[in-house]
Amino acid sequence: MEERLEAAGGELLAIVRNGVATVALNRPTALNALTLGMIRGLAAWLEAWAVDDRVKVIVFRGAGEKAFCAGGDVRALYEGWKAGRTDLLEFFTVEYALNYRIHTYLKPIVAVMDGIIMGGGMGLAQGAALRIATDKTKMGMPETTIGLFPDVGGSWFLSRTPGHLGTYLGLVGNTIRAGDAIYANLADIYLPPESLARLDDMLENVVAKAPYPRGALDEVKTKLGAEPKEAGELPAQRKAIDMIFGLPSPAAIAAALKDTDYGLGEWPGKTLAALAKRSPTMLAVTQEQLHRGRQSTLAEVFRMELGMVATALEYGDFMEGVRALLVDKDNAPKWQAPGLDRIAQADVDRFFASRWPVGAHPLANLK
Image (cartoon, rainbow, N blue to C red; front, side):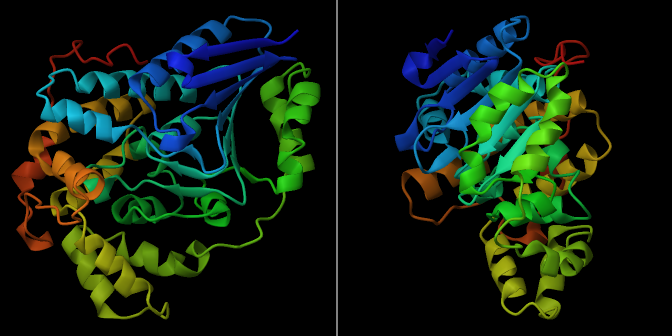
C-alpha cells in the first residue's frame, strides 16, 4: 500500500511505500531552498515516522535536476530583517532542532546529494546514516561569502574532517565534487547513474526488510558503490592545506598563501583572492567556531551556533553580505572590519558570549 503526503503547501512531498518514506524537497525553481514551513513539515514527519512501524528507512531527495538543496531561503530572511521583524531567530531555532534530530534519529536516513547541496542542505544531509554523492554533486558551505559562518552543524561536521580540511572549506566556502566529498568525510559513498537507478529497489527489498535496517546499509555500499570518476583536488592540496589552515589566524593564513606556490600552481593565489572577498570578522569567527566544535558535544554545537547566529543578525556583516551578493548583486559588501589586520577581537568574542541564562536556552532540550 502506498501513501502520498504533502506539507508546506506542496513544498514538501513524500511517498511511503514498502517500508521506505521518500521525502522530496519540492522547490526546484529555488534550488529547493528551505522555508520555515518546510523545516516544520519535515520535523513533524520525522516525529510521526519515529513511531510508525510501516517506516523502516527514510530517504531525502531534491526535486528537479539541479539541486538537492541550496540552503535556507536567506532572501526571505533579508526581507524580514528589512521589514523590522523581531522573530528571525525562530527560523534557525527550528532548523537547528531539526538538524539535531536527524543526527540522533534512530531509524536510518539516506540523503541522496544529487546536484547542488549547500548550507541548509548540508544540515539535512550530514546527519544522515548514508550520505550519497553522485556525478552531479556540488557541495559547499559558502556562508562566509555572505558574512555568516558555516552553521547548521558545520561546527560538528567540518571540524571532524581529516586534518584541517574543514577549516579550509569553512573559511574559503568553495565547492567540491563527489571525490573530494568522500575524501573529506562529507559523503559515504558515490553512486554512478546506473547504481542510483537501482537505489530505491534495494532500499525497499533489502534494507527495509532487514531485521536491522541501519546495518543493511552496508550492503548498499558494497553492491552499488563505486569509485568516483574524478579523484578530486583535495588529495594533492592536502599537505599545503594542513600546513596553512592550521595557522592561528586568518592573517597568518593569508601571509602563508602569499609565501610560495607550494607546487600547486594557481591554487594559493585563487584561495587568497577568495579570502580577500570574505568578511574578515567572520573568517576569524569561523576559525574559532571550528576550534570549539572539535571539543564540543553535538548538542553544545547547536546551542553555540544559535547564539552565534543571534549575534550575526545584530552585527551587520550577514545582512550586508546578503544584500551585496544576493539582493542588489553589486558584489561590493562593506564589511565591519576593513581588513584581516583590522579584526577586533572583542567583535569575535561577542559571537561566543552566553546570551541566555542556564536552562533558558531555546535549544536547552537537546540532550
